[in-house]
Image (cartoon, rainbow, N blue to C red; front, side):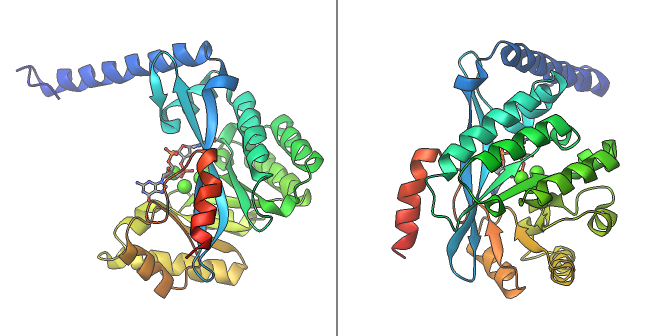
Length: 275
Ligand code: C2E
Ligand code: CA
Ligand code: CA
Ligand code: CA
């Protein structure tokens, strides 16, 4: 915030104006982007603490724009949604992710993020299922990560699409669990295979007894519902130790590895095997 000597309100609107211009910039660049050349997935491992092995890789979108440089998915995914480009981008990223997955050991799953718009778009869901079934990859190696945003928009369609994915043999995970509006009722009313505990509960797990209680409760909930549970965003050894002590089996975070480009996966797996 600049110290302009003007009122707070004006400083605030300056910042808003800047944010708006930045979004405009992204909007312009994305409209004209060669998405096949500029968008690609990177992969972050999800570790099974019991075996020490990689259980899955989560595919995370990256955009390297020749005009504005690297743009975070947290910025460009919402823009792609508002431009009506998300369905094409999702299909493109899924195709690229599947091509990589074909080189991995068959024990490793692919975890793939769906936009809220994808979850309520039956055309996209059908296209993804068709791609998945026409590959030589077992459908139960696919996990589709959804967020509650989609459920708020059109619950019935979202539920039907989740069922379609599961009937095709794939797994469905509820992402960012605990941060949504009515997470528990969604667990009750949807066929889910997996919950991902949001990073906000893992961040201060060593010191905050409320976070500890919440994580413990989510783990108990998963056990009772026969769902798998992944803790996101573990950055330190001590966070991992806490999660392990609480009985959390699957953990993801910078402590193990940051998202990596596809070329890094084989060396990473070879290295992990030597431990
Ligand atoms: P998400 O699905 O919750 O993904 C987790 C985010 O946390 C990723 O950020 C990941 O790089 C980051 N992360 C993982 N471990 C750690 C850690 O230990 N510490 C910290 N500080 N961060 C960690 P990223 O890649 O920037 O993605 C941000 C969000 O953008 C994702 O959140 C997801 O909502 C969305 N996104 C990413 N890729 C895609 C995609 O292919 N499709 C859709 N629809 N959304 C995507
Ligand atoms: Ca995710
Ligand atoms: Ca998440
Ligand atoms: Ca998130």
